[in-house]
Length: 468
Image 1 (cartoon, rainbow, N blue to C red):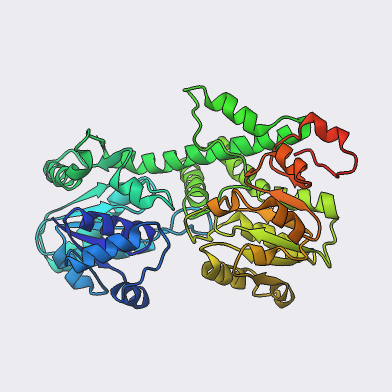
Image 2 (image 1 turned 120 degrees about the vertical axis):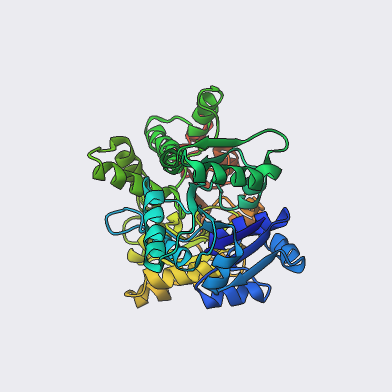
């Protein structure tokens, strides 16, 4: 099938590459010439395991092309995926300017029936706005081409997006109940048939329900994370171990284990933006979504938890203190720094006079750009932040190690070497990677999120120990 993808960001690039991988003829459009040049020169603008290999194979086979030619992109695809960004507006609502600009371009150049697929995460009612925008362009041209607008939200986890696309849990398709909608449904069924050979994963519904499903899914997952973080903070106070609690409640099949890990807060491009957008949609329709207000408030507070633990240990004035930070991206297997908890943590340390030596296996370039923006008005703070080439380089003379992202490389370090490298053997673990008892046995002060120390810790007066 001939497919056009409008937008070569995270969703668009993964979608285009994976559809080309299974044999479709895919045209990826972007207005950013630099990004297109990178892709045409064999590079890739994002880090996603397995994606570059798929792109290289499909380009070599002639099934995948990248261009800034809008007219050619509209002519190419019978199915036009809109996968552009929907950044948050000042009030938290999704900014649809890029989506509607793509719709105008399609309406301006289309000749013949087109299926327009909203792949971007968009609020309920966007398909109607896309339909109206295209219809207005056709009227202006005096053209009478038919078209159908479909909602096909993405459910891709950064760091596992290729796997999620190729082996989806579900495929949600929203179509209208008319002749053009029936035609679109059949085309989408054919497009996704290769992903349904084992069993049919497709859920058909009306367009507005499909749009709502995406926001509801992300809001539910964000709620689970904030719920566990709030319980973890209470566990710190009452001496419980949140990991034991997680196993206890996760074994209930009505709850399950997914997204029940306590930590330093969620970040990235989806959960923060989508929770705010759904809150704003509620407000616009006369509903206060009190649970989601709380989810966002808990997450904002959770990003301060490590700072609170650090200042309780070292004091508010961190001048002449040095901290090693392992992990900068908001999650492993990505270089995404959007709303990453590390940004809140490092800003807090620098504001208190500390020096920071930071390392991440993948996101160093993205982190440099993010902190250059965050600290643009604080040159002194910038001077006290350095980025190192390995996790080991961050440790010498550091007063403590702070773990912010749960990269696999951090899960089993040489603890003897770690203890010897640090100025003081103190670890603040924002992702609960290690067992508190084992850390005590290895001579560390260990501060985690909602993890009680074992009873024998109280019998070790020579070690400074921490509850939580």
